[in-house]
Image (cartoon, rainbow, N blue to C red; front, side, top):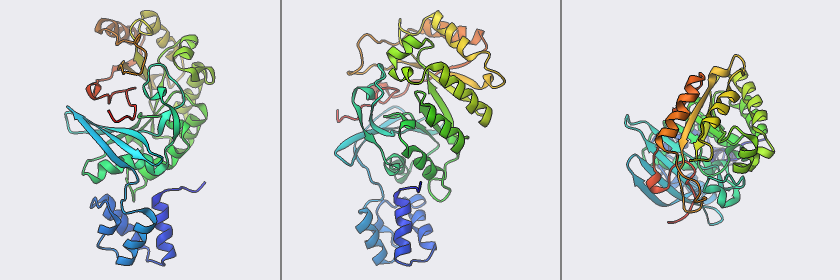
Amino acid sequence: MKLTSKYNTIRRILSDLKQPEYRYAQIMDAIFKQNISEYGRMKILPKFLREELTRILGPDVCSIVPVKEVSSKQVSKVLFAIEGDERVEAVRLTYERGWKSYCISTQCGCGFKCKFCATGTIGLKRNLTADEITDQLLYFRLNGHALDSISFMGMGEALANPHIFDAMTILTDPYLFGLGHRRITISTIGLLPGIDKLTREFPQVNLTFSLHSPFDDQRSELMPINDRFPVRDVLVELDRHIRQTGRKVYIAYILLRGVNDSAEHAQAVAELLRGRGPGEHLYHVNLIPYNSTDVTPESFHQSDKDRVQKFVSILKSKGIKVTVRTQFGTDIDAACGQLYGHNK
């Protein structure tokens, strides 16, 4: 299937107008090196070409419009307006050493109804196009921010949107964003067809699997997708991914006090990940503090430090690699599971 994006449209416009090959490079240079955000300001191009680009694509290089930006220490969250009068959010994280990481949305809303996630309460409005996904990053790029690493962990389930593969093609194109595959992370609740396609087409992209409970009945309660793709089936697919790519797989696990943070849960997580063959050392558990919102159940609370430490020590004692994720952006609803796409 042919990639549909503004970059292909630009190529077609140039071809229709019988423009020389180098015009495409000039336009990409204007966008990605000179940070020129409007076609009409690309003075290196002849006037008729600037006008034609503007007529067909609109005046702005970016197809999404920033509506609101809120910032706190190290975190900036931008609310974008997209076609259809909908909203999506993207987050920029700046680490102490200056590294800039981005959490990007792939869908407007989400249809999978995970109990602990604000985005899931909206339902799925629609998939974002490849341009709408990549334009979240283009916005930051045009505003002078380096794109050091990208996570598709914003609104939506990345592998449920077929345009995600076009978006990654754009992001890794050396003439466009030029991002290394290992700078990109895809997060999934365990959609087997998507994992299979990722393994085949983007084997070097990082993969995170959202587990959140090692027990099928409880995971189905928290994450209804488990009825369609049970956790053991997903792990078999992840074993295959590791065998074929030699890449680490991250296991995301949100700790909910009194729900999934017991010693029994920790033991069961370790049991799931042990004995998986030569690639078992490539599984790495990321424990994530729960972030409450106005729209998620009041019964969910963050685990206390002692329970987190106990969970960590049990996993480590079983030889499981584990990290507790640093919290960013809870004060501006920009942390994991809090993106909601509202104007508050």
